[in-house]
Image 1: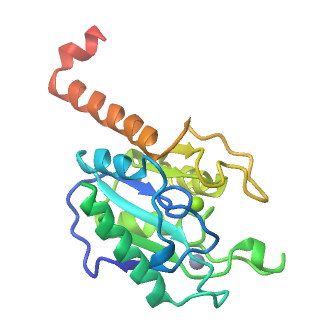
Image 2 (image 1 turned 90 degrees about the horizontal axis):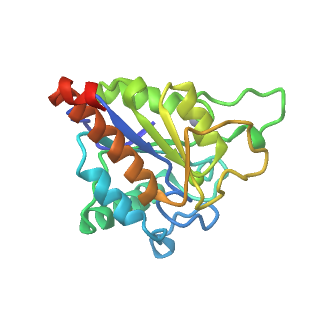
Image 3 (image 1 turned 180 degrees about the horizontal axis):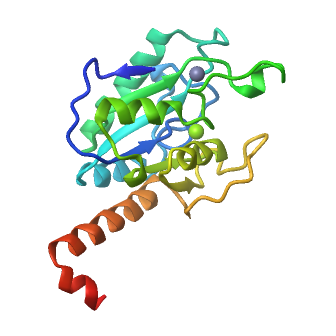
Length: 212
Ligand SMILES: [Mg+2]
Ligand SMILES: [Zn+2]
C-alpha cells in the first residue's frame, strides 16, 4: 500500500528501493515514535548521493506492527513524514513510501498464506513500478535483511545487502545471494552511482564504451 505521495509523479523509469528500519534509520524494534527516529551513520550521506542521480527513491517497508496492534497507520505516516523531512534537510529526497500493514509469515500459522506485499514477496515493488512507471529490471534494492534481497530478486532488481541493522542475519534468514554486500547505505549508494554513471558514459559515447 502507498503511504505517500497522494499522487505519484513519474519522472524516471528507474528507482532505488530502500528498506527503512535497519537500512536508513536504527531498527529499535518496530520504531514508530518520532522521538526514536535515529539515522544510521552515513545513511543521510547515502540519501544525498542517491538524490543526485536520475532515479526515484522509494521506501518499501514491512510494517507488521500495525497488524500486531503496536501502532497505527497514522503513527507510521507521521514517522515517515519526519524521516522524509530530515532526509531533505540533509540534502536527500524520498519520492514514495510503500508499506505492508499485514502480519508476516513468521507471525502466521504455517497453513495460512501471507499477503503478497510483505517482503520477501515483491508486491510493494510491483505496486511502485506501476505508480511510477518503472522498468524493474533497471531498478536497485538496498536492504538489511535477506527478505529484502529476496523481494528485490523476485522483482528482477539488482540487490545490495547492507551490514547495518540485521545484516542479513535475521531469524529465519533465507539462502539468497545479493549482488553486493556493503557496510552501509552510503557504500550502497556509491555502487548505484557507479552503475548509473557507467551507463550514461556508455550511452553518451559508444566509442568510449568499446575502448573500456
Ligand atoms: Mg530492515
Ligand atoms: Zn501485506
